Image 1 (cartoon, helix red, strand yellow):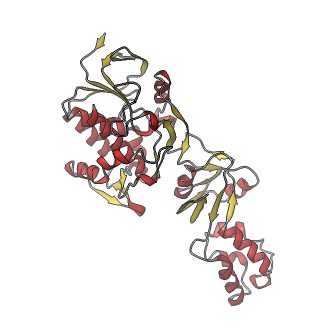
Image 2: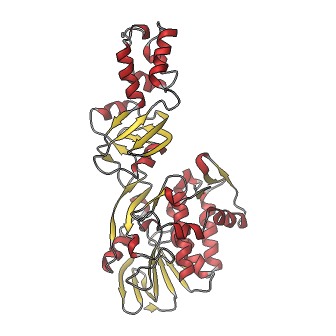
Image 3: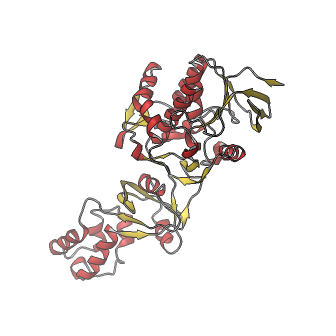
Length: 392
């Protein structure tokens, strides 16, 4: 049996889909919100260590990657971080700011999901979970077949996300729909993802697994200063996740392991002042001990005073400009988000509607707009969902 009583169908009850549905529902539209999962907001629930890094103090368009760097400006200007903060305030949800403008709930991410569902309820949104889309057709209206029945509406919003974190149910539905309707797609790839390395460099990283330090990491002209973490497969941590979004296969990264110091003058000064100490002892003053041990010669090496200046110069070069070429990434299983997606040239930046198929919208992670780590991707979800919800 087909239910034709809806003004729009939103597929995907994540951050963008919930925002779109509640916005349109509270404008008097009859909205059906479908999700194949057993509960809404699966990625919201695990974000920020369970506390939901729901936005950032500042979300300029320059902190979002897209083939069209201007596309996100319209939606981001019309739904800003302060708008979401105001929504939290109306629901009594307290929050705090961490480093680099990142905003987190004081309590649980479940509060954010409950708030969004409550707002959907206020808009009389028909939320149906455990409904897997099996077929889509368009013949004047959109016909959505699911394993729980069929539905029709004149408008369809795809908010099904990307391919990241498949254990939460991520699928390529958005790309399948795009191909079906002839909407171009920028090839998707894992983003905000740990980097993997080949031997022999990974052997050192494996031995240092769990060691973290503050670094400056660069890919071309793109530079981030945050924490880096050694792993069994390579490198992770905020600095690495950030730069990963800017890498193509074969690209090199450069890491400054000692951002607070000019390494060679510092080493030479230590050599003059404390010639009898071991090099690794000196390095441990500026680096985690395990990293200092990995970078310095063995215990039977001469003391710092007996280390040639040219050897210290070579070490300083590595400390300040450690050049590495990743063998790959840890893939969608560990990626925070998916970069690429629905080509923004096919969408209206104001309504998120496709230019060639009236009534068909794409929002959120499915679109070729990828934010930095730190709440930016949630802000894109809220902003793009609001834009489509206002347009329905």
